[in-house]
Image (cartoon, rainbow, N blue to C red):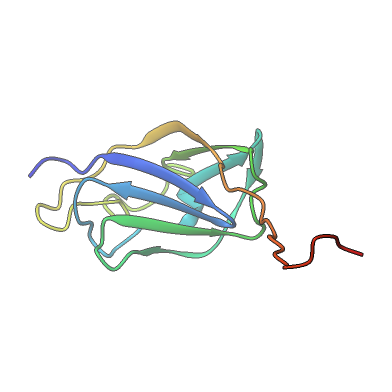
Length: 126
């Protein structure tokens, strides 16, 4: 197997999902290593990063929902260079190979605003 690569970045409401090409180790980095910006302004993930059931997707929760049409950029790297080597890296479950840092991956939040449909047998509404 190869080094896991990021194949999809999805924003929905107040969550960010990073989908990788293969299953990942359950030891994930601190959310502080994910630098998330919405329309250029830094936002912070809350709580720890989690893995999806199939272990291919890292899920991050944000304090506030991201508005539809917002530009979201994400970078993953060392916060201050002081972390212990190998601690909290994103790694392949099968091979232990480390995922490379990513810089400014971006996505537009295409979440649509909720809509309401009204149906009636009346020919006019009051």
